[in-house]
Image (cartoon, rainbow, N blue to C red; front, side):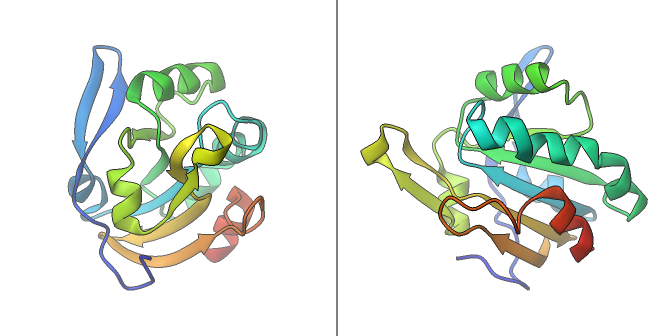
Length: 159
């Protein structure tokens, strides 16, 4: 599992744009920036939609005030699903919705969650991290079913 001091892996992922899905490089997203990234098990799922993403939206200005240049939401979903979720949540350009469709990036982080038995496939654990210039400075991984250490308010306290 990725840990404090490690470098975020540079991989190609997708994000939704008005023109359709666009490839983004995680190395470029993180390089030279203070970034908060939180991951959800899935777009449109109950805790993710009711609490996790809305918390980061609600506190986006507070993150910016603490020097965070980018807030990223990561999910093992495709860019179309994340685009629809962003529209439904009215996230606008406050949060970069990063689609890890195959789960390769999540696996490279060592934070995958096997939900095959529940019909959901392999997803991401719920977590949040802070990175400065691509290096992890804070990592908070939730216990199974938990929603405490990766919520927006907890991450703000860590800044």
